[in-house]
Length: 572
Image 1 (tube, helix red, strand yellow):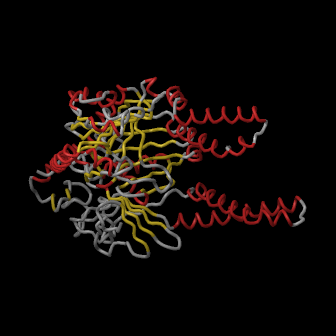
Image 2 (image 1 turned 90 degrees about the horizontal axis):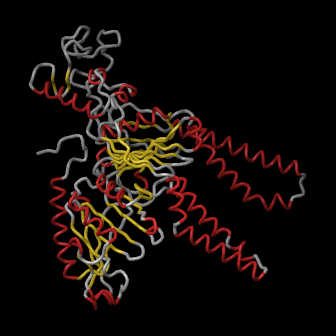
Image 3 (image 1 turned 180 degrees about the horizontal axis):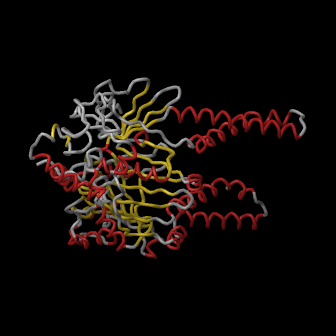
């Protein structure tokens, strides 16, 4: 996607990408833009990955040669140590150059990241397209107090901007500033008196700023081109020490070196901008108990397969006296163990809180991640329940954002908002991600979770679909809610999917030869992200009517939807 495309994050390679002198580009970059660097310790925290890769490649390529050459043990150890030392030095040198060439800026329009040693690259994440902001701390970062900020924008893997590494306080400040700007808060124009008077939340600061803007809009010589000059303030018209162009130096005397006139907002220092974007308050609504997480993993299908496999292989070895099958399946067993451990480590101590800047999700055992999902960014919601989880009444709720597939670091971009929870906790989370879901529709949601047939207004598959789906044909159904289209499917593995009307991208049907014979189709509601809402075996005529009605609902919902910058009022 090109840099000028407003749909998401742009990438520009080569020497270009800088704004022309005297003018700001579409991403807000101009001659007064303040470029920042990540912390100088970043090369030390990132070089080990490259060093490990170089050592592994070198040893793999030369292992056979070392084994054939008759060298003393000490000589072999010395060669290996030399290779490791050389890899460390090369990695540190390259990481240092990469750090020197990396800089980022947070403008009024976007987050811009420039990087590259041999080939320069500029990546832009527009504020209106930001899907989430995450502060992550790997194990080394937790030990030494450093964190990485990831800005997820609409798009694919290249739409994730990583600012690594910053101090913990600076990472939180950058997150606050990005979210404040994405919400529509102009931190460059906020009144300092709002902070000094004790407003310590974004909402309070916005209200104070709006009051100042309203006062300035009534007229007067001190409000020109949207820049409010307070009487008596340094740099204001008529203030002591103001020069012909209205700019003053730190000693109060005119400063003609800036080249800014009285109508040009003076850039704020980075620390002052971060001070003007304090962290919004939050209220915790969910915390996952470690015992429940362990129990859910024990009842997970992967764990059950792992245990049955071990029992079968051990039994086969005892019965036959041959253990080749055990050694041959080690890698498969390690894969299953890695999956279970990854799920436990990434979802340990999951906490969900609500705040004015969106949903905040924190989790992690060794590597901790704190992600903030701004309002209106959820593209689809999926609720799952496996057959063994049904014994405990547990469900898993996932949301997807407008970033497709896998991130640049290999992490999946579909988030488990509720890794394991009860039906009541699912209802709470649904009200958070679908705020327009009405209370009187709760019975319909329950019918979508555990019901079947046409109870509570659900429209199931026709009876003739039992020939191709004898178990789940009565479970497969849809229901139009006030906030979203709900699709229900699965008898053994239950699934309930919600697609907000305004997030519907397109609609489609597919039909195979057997479906054509039975006059049924598979209905799909396409949306951005990793969740694919589909419903099999829908009556063909009913699906046609649903497509027409849902398309009209989607258009109507987008017309009345709030602005992308959720703290700004929608245009009339």
